[in-house]
Image (cartoon, rainbow, N blue to C red; front, side, top):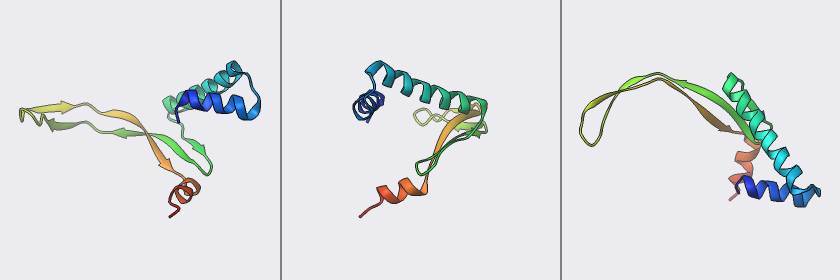
Length: 92
């Protein structure tokens, strides 16, 4: 499922116009993005949580040439799956 599929599904299931569904989904993801930029944690109960992890810089190696290179520190989004989602997906 992609963002467009989500908008279409929301419009069909809840009877929203496509423009209202698009605006709703855009607001949801924009607010999540802004929270992560500020360093906040975003939790969706039963689904999972999003957070930003900070990674230190390190000296890496170019695998093609073997040359050493400095990798800068960075902050990246990280998703941790919730118990409810994990259990629903792992049905065997």
